[in-house]
Image (tube, rainbow, N blue to C red):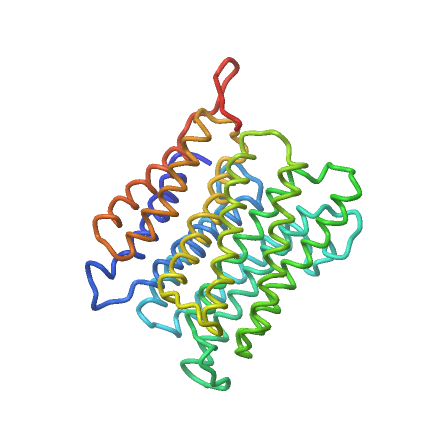
Length: 366
């Protein structure tokens, strides 16, 4: 990926985080949709298509997706729903084109004994993005025009948050791509279970949310946590020793904490434990988007370039300080929001623009 495209993604992803703090400076407006869309759909969706096409630079179709997804984000923010539906339909066609060209219309890989788990997660990621676009159209139609389903849980913004799941799946795909050559029977069994547990688990969890059953949500959340921990175990044990391993291991640890905060949020509803729900949910969202998902997206953008000239531990430390400290505080205090944006932009700059290592360079793989 050339520097122009990297700079465009850096700007978009930094702008996304900035919109997450904009309520501190312009309290009369909500910028949450721009915050979510510019990271999940515009940046994340574009990187997913770029990785799927396996080209040195994004194709015209991927660039079209990037531009149209920006239009979709702005239209949804402005509540211009009819044109937003039209744009979402075009985005769906673009994603399906890449998915079918890369894999097939029907996801045969899911049921294949020979297909690697990495390929399965990759196909699931593209399919999930396609389904997410269709569901967003249906959600808009339901909320704004037909109101067929009347439920407090059936909120439009809830569906928009669903665009983060394809990013989780593609990051898992990258992780398993560094393990799929393993012939160990334990790995093959656990990785296959993880694939189905994570994909079906999220679908079932979504159904339980609509049903409003906190107990069932808690049970499936614990199942998902176990699956995530098993992925961490597999990656630490079987993942190839490579510079990317440090970043992806850090990412999966972010995901473990994301799962734990999600469980804490659910438990808070039916126990005497009193935790501010808004604070907990905000921390959960930041860990998911800017911790776990960002780890994968940053690695994917430089996937063909590794090893690169940076100190992995120092860069990861900056990432953790930004996500676990500055960004949560930045949601409430303007000075921390500015520090979070600066630190976040610096992390992206280091990840995107560090030079490719050459023979003789000292590279940290820890």
